[in-house]
Every structure is written in structure tokens, then in C-alpha cells.
Length: 522
Ligand SMILES: Cc1cc2nc3c(=O)[nH]c(=O)nc-3n(C[C@H](O)[C@H](O)[C@H](O)COP(=O)(O)OP(=O)(O)OC[C@H]3O[C@@H](n4cnc5c(N)ncnc54)[C@H](O)[C@@H]3O)c2cc1C
Image 1 (cartoon, rainbow, N blue to C red):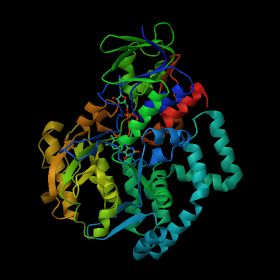
Image 2 (image 1 turned 30 degrees about the vertical axis):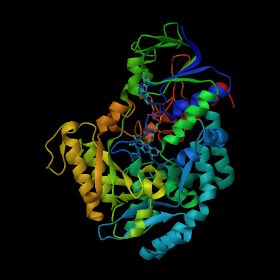
Image 3 (image 1 turned 90 degrees about the vertical axis):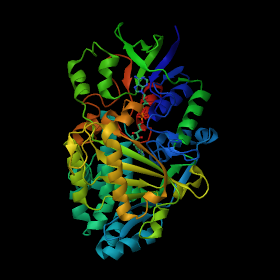
Image 4 (image 1 turned 45 degrees about the vertical axis):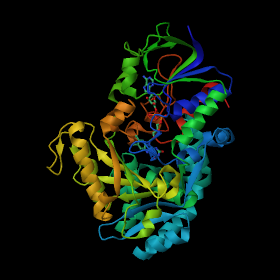
């Protein structure tokens, strides 16, 4: 029987980062991936027409570029081919009257744009930016710390020492705030608030959800301070490099090899059984990068801890995403050609539109006016399309996993096979309202429904792109469930990793790397 020190289930970037570090520390590692290729939610494929390379899911690699894993292994990753495409015109929002606001790395340019809508907000932006390095140190320390008593105490002590009691209370209060509560007390203009609140919708923080202020704040400040990065040639540059580093250190990665069961019969996780019947032994650890609900099928008789098993079953997913990939003759004709330079243009014109889209999707309705993240990767990296052509990456937020109705009363289909094209038509028409003539530029289109996302990667339950709600009751110490935020499970030698676990979704590799360090040191 084949045996490794660690058997990792799933070759998403967390599984791969974990594999790379363990292998570098001398562990023998086998990674088993159900899909035909590694990457999970990070893949770049010719989805529409030859020569047009589309990021199937994740496009923005800023979290990875700034990650502790990349700090430790950046040189190895670069040697294995990792290349970033830096973005200086990061994100913008467009409004119904054709005005827009955007954040570019040139702070004076951003300031001028904000000042055109509100002098007070331009000053507020400047003040936030000046305070960012101090606050970021605390926030990144928290987000990069394992959720263990000692690590949390160290972060808290650092904040108390630097900020005093009142500063610490301010920070804690901020962490609890909704996007709207924080935006209302910080800015006056509806446009600046919408510009930032759109980032909450990348997770599942509609404007009124407690705990959501952090993300608009961090994205605003981090993009302003450091810019954004995409993958050169496609987001999969990161996966190719991770695979190279892991394999270079001796890890074995097998794709098309779904894991069906974890064998914990001897009182500890000692092996996995693949769908093809092979049994792979794990001497020290089985590490599952799966959605919590899948644990029940991997361990049919449970972990032996009813509270933990109930937590896994009750793990809450966020509403889904529908993706539209377009091959285009030219970038959209936005009212201002400057918008063609931005990596992201958010079609999320007000907090109220965001609230309604989230409420519709949560109620099982196709939103009448969805929020759309228009990604323009070829504005930054033209190598992804034939000369003069472009790809467009439309992330339609939010969409229900199961359709109970249409908030606009126009789409009759109640399953995604029937509803995905008409709903995509609605989204494209919405973008076209802001960029007339878009349809006439489309060479080819591919729509990926929430269910298609899940079919491609079982962790994206109902098309939930973040593998589990990040609301406060399921984040920090409670991710994926209270008492298990340190990736351990009640079964000896069985660990969880991935977006469902701390520190959550995104391509920051935090979960896989922190767990690997916990297991192997370093
Ligand atoms: C549409 C979309 C857009 C996104 N955009 C961004 C973005 O721009 N920037 C960003 O930072 N984040 C983005 N995200 C989120 C980010 O991509 C994910 O949070 C992250 O990639 C998750 O990585 P992971 O390694 O935890 O898991 P995943 O990437 O989900 O990988 C898990 C892997 O495990 C495999 N697996 C599961 N069960 C089994 C089994 N039983 N046997 C074998 N294999 C199994 C799956 O097939 C999958 O390959 C996006 C996500 C989506 C879906």
C-alpha cells in the first residue's frame, strides 16, 4: 500500500501551499485531487475561443502576493514560473449618470477624484491613509495569527501597548461594524460609500451586516497603498508555481483522484480511500481541504464528537456567484475611456442596490439588479488574448444556489440550466446600460452558473465562492466551528484546511501554510 507522512485531499492553493511547506520540511506528501487539474478555484482556461485565456474563478492575486507564504517561498515560486502583473488603476465604481470614482495607486489622482464629489471625503481618505500603516500592522497581525489563545493574546497585547485602552476599543468596535455603519461615520458622499461598500459584496458582507467594515476598509487602503496584482498570463501562474515548488520538494500530486473516505478505524486518521478503490496510508496526518458538509461523506460514522459533527452539518454557505466570460473585440465603451484602464469596474451604484441584491439572493430570488464586478484583465495583461482583442470577467453577485423565483418576474426557469443564459443576458444588459454597444463586441461567451461552479469544485457549495459565510458567528474563533479554528478535528491526525477554515476565503494561502507550520514547524 502506498504511504505518505501526510495525505492531502484537494489541490487548491491551500492544499498545495501546505504540501509545499511540509515537503520542504522533509515530510513525504501525497496530494489527491478530484478534478482533472490542480488549482480548485484558481484556474485559467480557454473558455470561449482559441487564444482567449479566462480566469475561471479567482482573478485578483493580491492576497497571495502579500501572503506570509509568498514571503517565505517567493524566490522558489519565481524560479518555478510565478509572475505577477501589477495593477495601478485598481478599482472603480460607475454610477447611473455616467460619473465614476476610482482608486489608483497615485494617491494624488485618487484624492482629486474624491475631492470632485466631496472635499470632506478627500480629507477623510487622506487621514485614513495616513493612519493605515499603524492600523494595518494590527489587522494583518490578527489575520495572520492562528486562532489560538497565545497568538490572540499576543496580538491583543500588541494593540493595547501601541494604542492604549481607548484605541484598542476603537479597533474592536471597528471590527464589529457593518460596512454602512463605518462608511456613514467616515464619509459623507454616497459615491465614496458605494465605491468602498462594493468590496463587502466580494465576500458576503452586504452593507448592513455586522463585521463587514473590515473588508471595504482593507481593500480601499491596500489598493491605494500597494496596488493590486493579477497573474501574468493568468491566475494559474500561481498554481503552476505552487505545483512546481511542491513537486520539487518531493510531493506527489495526483489529479482525477477523488477521495471517497477517510479511514479512522484505528482511533486516528490513518489512510484515505480513493474512488478507484486504492487505499493510501497516512503516517502522520490526513489534511482535508473540503467543505465542512463533505466531511460527513468522508467519515460516514462521524468524528465521535456530536457537537463538532453538528457544527459541520450546520456550516452556513453564502449566496452564490454566476460568472460570465466574454471574448471581446474591444474593451467596453465606458462613458470615460479612463475606465478602460481599471482592473475592476464595479457595477454596484448604491448601498441600497447592494442590500436588495443580497436580500433577493438570500431569499432564493434571481436579483432584479445584481451587483457585477467587471474584471478587465487584458487592460493590465494583454497576453491573455490575441492582439487587439480582450477578455472580460463578469462576476455576478449575488445569485441563489437554488432558484425559488425571479425578483424581476421575467425569468421562468427554476433550475440553473434553464435560468443561466437569461440571467446572464440580464447582467450583460445591465453592464451595457453603462457601456453601450458591449454586445456588439462579443466574439464568444461562456456562462458558468453557481451549480456549474459547484460541479467543477465541490467546495463551492451552491456557487458560494467563499466556501462559507464570513459573518461574525462563523469567522475568527468560530471558523469553521467554535473550538476547531486551529484546523484540528476531534479525530486524531485528521485536519481541515482551505477557505472554510481560518483565515477564510481568498488566495492568501493562510490556512494551508499556518497548518503546515503548526505540524512541521518553520
Ligand atoms: C468565481 C470566484 C471568484 C473568486 N475571485 C477571487 C479573487 O479574485 N481573489 C481572491 O483572492 N479570491 C477569489 N475567490 C476566492 C478564492 O478563489 C478561494 O477562496 C480560494 O481559491 C480557495 O482555495 P482553497 O485552496 O481553500 O480551495 P479550493 O480552491 O476550493 O480547492 C479545493 C480543492 O479540493 C478539491 N476537493 C474537494 N473535495 C475533494 C475530494 N473529496 N477528493 C479530492 N479532491 C477534493 C476540489 O476539487 C478543489 O480542487 C474567488 C472564488 C470564486 C469561486
